[in-house]
Image 1 (cartoon, protein in one colour):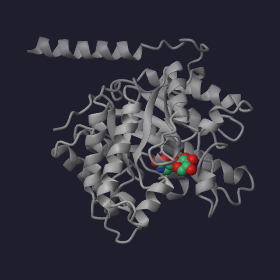
Image 2 (spheres, rainbow, N blue to C red):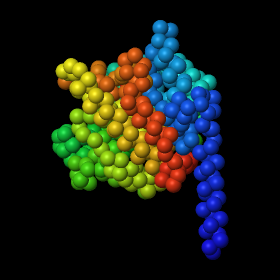
Image 3 (tube, rainbow, N blue to C red):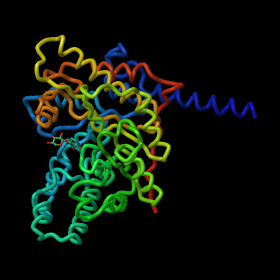
Image 4 (cartoon, rainbow, N blue to C red):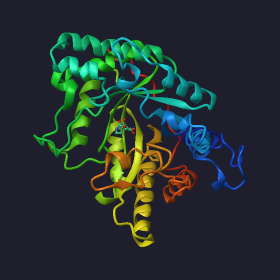
Length: 395
Ligand code: XIL
């Protein structure tokens, strides 16, 4: 008995060592460990580190650094916009695959896995769809067929090329909505009822048996009081019942859009939350990480430094929590540099920014070095390589 136990431990340790040594410290890079790319360092943990890709920036001949960094630093990519419904099907029944196909080809050439984003969401829907429902020319029955058709067509088109799909995005309300009890919100729930969530996963699975299917949302980093206004608890209950009902869901994506003005999470809160999800048999991922700050009245470095430091710290909290859980498969940043970030456009009253790990001039910020240090200086026994998640067939 004793001997057997010892053997198991020894084999596990050897496997861990083997995985961690897959990328030698100097592989294809400068000899100093800190000169390695994020993707090389993440590969030691079998972790995929990614970014949202802005297709216009990727194809901008005046901006070669963008393409260079996406290639060099990341081993997974997400389309920031080009796989959203309004981009893929701007006119009913007429699909515009070009930009999304180009991104997939770019990823293939650069040995990057692709997160598909997004199949069902309340935002960035084409006008023909929302207006058709509003004016009654599209009935509820027809809407359900349209959704099924869209999911089936899109997932089949990209079949075999998508690692993880965000099947349903942002279905849950927020505590500041009315009523404050968390509920299914928005266009799809209002028109089809909450059953659309389970349907969407089943339709996606039927179209691609191998892609990992995720529920994705924001403000899922840490449980609150676990009461009726705790969004994490709502999502936890939802995915637990989806699994119990045999719905083919494989993971929960935590977007990770944080703001330094809200204070810091601690790494144990976040890793406990990931563990609650992975204890259900689901994988997790951080899917859209950025940490923004208020930018009005930043007169000098006295104002700037604390923001950069808090951003770095919170990037670190999320990455460390992810590393702590072998079922946290990927860590994706939402935008390469502050120049390309969605934050200044979307959070402008008061103005916010400084959310990514590279500044406006592609200089790496403290947050970049925080991520690098976390990847570099972690390993067994507390950090073990990621474990492959097998697609759930459902029943
Ligand atoms: C954002 C993009 O970054 C912007 O370019 C676009 O104008 C709006 O959408 N949650 C999501 C992402 O799931 O799709 C959003 O992306 C950011 C919030």
